[in-house]
Image (tube, rainbow, N blue to C red; front, side, top):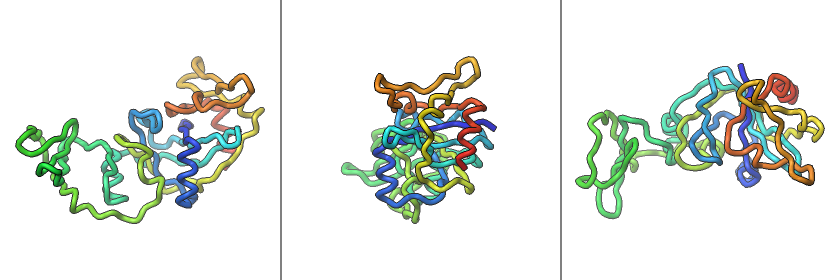
Length: 216
């Protein structure tokens, strides 16, 4: 079991607050985007902690044990009723009505019928107009487009800021291995920078993992 962090921007945290999304965290997504980095390194049993910077302080927003890993598309269709621009798995075709006729979307491509070759491996066709939204919470929608994987849990913590004292933050270390683990970066005024947190899901040292766990 390893511990990881992922970064939530102040804008995203404000959206969570706007939607009163402060219950138990149940899912996080991964993609190739900096705002929603890959979660492919995670394994079942790992713990992931979304973090944010509030009032120049590092805050741990939630704790989620990884209980299930699956394509984001599958999770979204099942739990929200829509796919929210998640990457479409191979073998599935989404059909909708566009301005110039029937429009098809599938893994690695899209286009109007008659103008694009449909892959031979299609086994499921979904009419976009038949999708019925299900009640869900704000964080169950991906932060941005092209979500690839969803890591989910039924035992996540409540979502709210848990500040870490600055002197403790200086001792935190992150990296894939002990030899590559480094502290977070601060600017010339001694403030923690979002650059040192965003863009990647970061594995934490054993000592850092213990510090995070004590918050819960």
